[in-house]
Image (cartoon, rainbow, N blue to C red; front, side, top):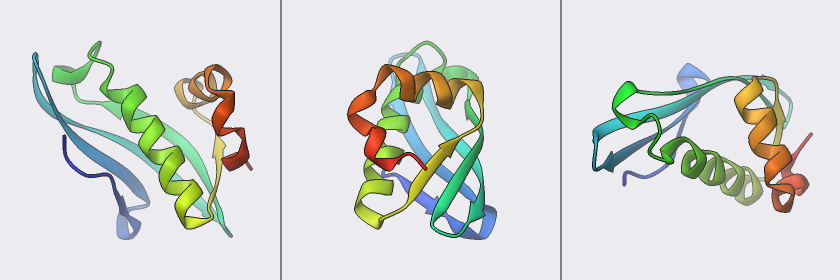
Length: 94
């Protein structure tokens, strides 16, 4: 599994994964509003779909936000649903 990174020049969080079905990337496009990141879209490459990589990516994103003092404001349906299912990360929500 690749390391999580914040590609600030592209307003994108991303992470590489290697799973049984293949190798690929999960990313989230965001907009900046002060210390908040509005999560506009989360997507996994087709080779990762159904592998759990997107959920692991969301956890890494929440942990990154916690470490950096960022707040996340999920706008895309996947990010909203993931946060509803993981209230242990409510402290990073904007």
